[in-house]
Amino acid sequence: MKQYFGMSQRGDLDEALRGLHSPQFIMLFTNDGQFEAHVAALEKRFPGVPSIGCIGMSYQTGIVSNGVGVVAFSGGVRAAANVLEQVSTMPVKYIKRLEQDMRQVGGSGEDTVCIDLCAGNDACVLTTIYTALRRQGISLVGGTGDQGKVSANGKVYEDAVAYALVRNEGGRVKTYKENIYHQMGNYRFIASNTDRANYILGSLNGKPAKEVYKSILHVTDEEILTRTFQNPFGKLNGDDTCIISIKEVNGNALACFRQVNDSDVLLLLELGDYRAIAQETIRQICHDFPSRSAIFSVNCLFRYKLFSEQDYMQTYLQDMAALGNHAGFVGYGEHYNNRFVNQSMTCVVFE
Image (tube, rainbow, N blue to C red):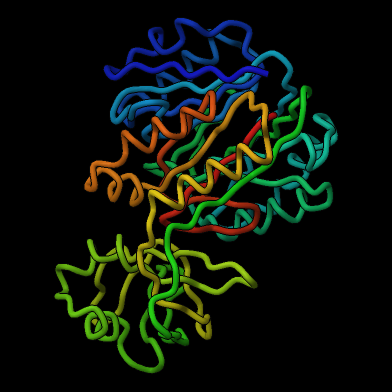
């Protein structure tokens, strides 16, 4: 298989598609002002080719911040794209679409992956999708787009998740999740006074969450929102830790980018040696896949901001490009199988 990446910093879709021929699956990442027009134009250009899209930044060796980026697969891929609607209330109502697409594409966890782009309510969406995927051992990688809109097969949807099942007919696939944080000290908290609908974390060990965070890290209210780059929370999920970013201060509570429930066990995390961790991920991929056709990744917006502030983003993209054909997009949350995480990188590698 082959992966194509085309882009236009000025939002010219024709420019982004200039080198694309006979695609078998397409992903569109564009800006809010041109999203609907680009979705329609892409379908007109490649009618019937499975496609998904969202509003967001894309990248290969550089960032496309407010233009348009296109990632496409060809030469040995079988794909199906669709949507689950009403994700805020009842995504399971549409699960038969996914089950039918799985039968159409065939494949297994060895050669097939699900890529999703979501408009919201991610945790519920992932639980729903993964109930179907896990029967075939198929992994999922994806993320959240901007403005609550996604597209599939030439149509724009709100309150939906767009997904694609992609089967590599020329080899294996494998997914990865990169965490650049580790536990800080022995801080361990029981969450309470949460508001699940609004992602509010009210109390930690019975004390106001904002005051606990401030007292440990010696920061002001204003500094909390940037300090989450260095010190997010982590939710224990079996032997894994799901990162939870702080969105804003809400009175004495903290609003997060990921749902927190009463009685959840949380850790305080701190930033590790992200350069060394990224290199270790690259080494692991090279070990697992001596020959690579493509790598598609999702990097969190907060990772992008952190790496940019540290003058590392360009170096990071160049290091990933050394793996071969690497492309991806910047998400507002990352998906890995049935887990919704923040401040992470998830990717799928095609042999």
